[in-house]
Image (cartoon, rainbow, N blue to C red; front, side, top):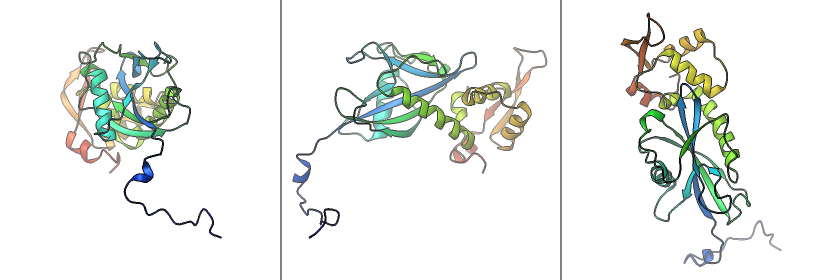
Length: 240
């Protein structure tokens, strides 16, 4: 007697074996991080306009179309809901709990997006009531979106330690104080100033400019900018 585990696979090749299978929907949900020096790390949310949970806040999301891959869908959804283009996007995790969507079985593929808030102040559309919220004080979100955010924040901490992705959240010119405050916000702590400065200078990614920021003191603090060529080369490894 042949066991089920050892039984040969069917040899049908005309596609008929797929006709009676259930096809769950595939959704893409984007956790969009931004940073403001006064507020800290933020996440962009939209107001849900459909039942169930109509009126509650949600991540940027939509369904995968038949003609596109996941990356294309993430870019399309982000543009349709916010007007944003050419932002840092990275596939994060699949959420596949059977009951995660009460309407229909839906598998969600999450993406992390990192944007400079001030570059997109005038591009965020009003149609879906998109709004920035402090990452540490979000409203209750629909379905399993709170779980998605928790995972995304953990991964951001991990990635920012190994890869220079934190710079995606900063303006083109920044001071060391601004850079440190960003990482303080990501890690939800106060990093040692001296150690942080030495670590960042050792990466070789920073170029000191002649201009100074004198808004907080007469002496001022030098502005820095990212070496774009080194940044691109080292995107997958902070400490090459």
